[in-house]
Image 1: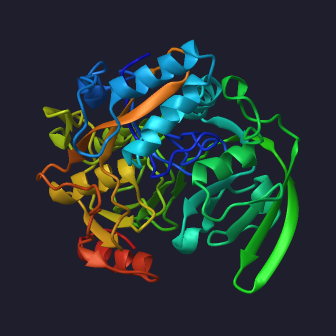
Image 2: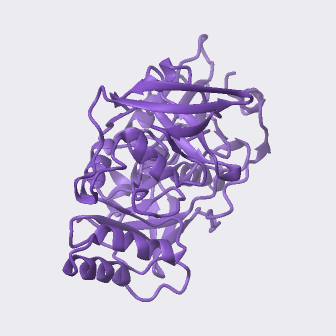
Length: 406
């Protein structure tokens, strides 16, 4: 097991709900999170220690204890019970809402998803007030998009199972067709299999049946200016493998009219990819610091290819983890004006370790901070200029004032 450090979306852990996602907030359908990748990509990512393990001591800070989780899994296996379930129970009792447990099949699904492909219906989900589960994003040209499902819709039931007061991960497991499987065999359903949904939009209630499909993630979209000297808009949905270099290439090929980096709804992802993206705007220097059980580490941008054009960053309450890290770095370093609404506030660090039955426990080991030392967890990033519905219009006005195009 490589010692990757992860950012993970909030959830309550129960067996059947232990589907994690480190990258699309919920595997295969999307809901996201973030991950510290130790893949050795260029520049800053090589500076991420890939074997910075937690020491397993008692976690007095409300996080799950690694040794206790591993011991519970081992004892359960000796007794002929599910080690995955036992580990998930320990994590749940710890009160650590960021830690979770994958089955071996789920973790393999996650690895595939980091390569940009998954089987699902194209929905990203989030918990909402009153115990509801709502759609946060819909993948274009997916089964969900073709059925007319939209962000903000409430997902009331999946295959007849109510979603209210259920963990988002459990709902995703049902969407993927794996919630009823045995823990050691749990994996996503095949493309073409049906899943029945019940939804609500305002006073409208309706039911629909979708058929799962093999989807590829398209996390970076670029809108070029129509006229010379105009602004280039780069929208980043999440930081999967290769996303950082996609952002850098989009910035390198942009005309010198300014860059609007749209991180609204960014569900996080590989932090190493966010650091690689930061190098498109920062010519070296600090991107973030983080701690692992009190041991401090730092992440730095690669040097040599940063744009000199003005930059404006758009954020909102759906901007999470790796997206917050990037926005906070550009804000602290004075490289961009940040516009929008306060971000989600996910700044804790998780690290996975393999359990005796092949499942993976992903446990909180520390927190990260922006270059100026600001903690993000529970606080988020506060924009320089508050804006809601008219955020993009404000961004274009600010860009003009910075000497860029609009």
